[in-house]
Length: 159
Image (cartoon, rainbow, N blue to C red; front, top):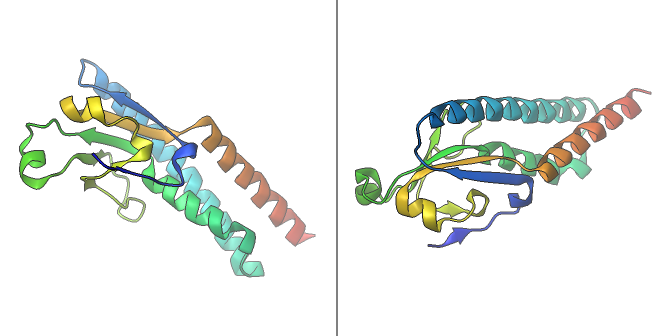
């Protein structure tokens, strides 16, 4: 299986879980937490956009903006079909997204490629289950640093 490499994997953390009793409470909690993280990222993107409307492009944030969009689109709960599932056999679909928030913030609803931020593909693709992709500690620090930088920018523009 080919693993698709990304530049956002250091900011993400994945947990693989298999079908067990009571697992859906964990899935629901993860979907809710991820929704809140997406809202925070959208808020940061909005703050940058508002600054750019007022003062023009902020070139130092161009790469960070694309990284934040990629992170926002990557975090989520992914169901992994087991090898005998007809959707996987017929359609070659390996995974699907749980709890999609909105069309504009979700690039993928299902797919057949394995992204590097999903973690190790071999055991879970053999039996099916779930991959929960959320922010890593480094990802949390990265977004917090962006937030502090935006605050600093906005206060320096207003003085």
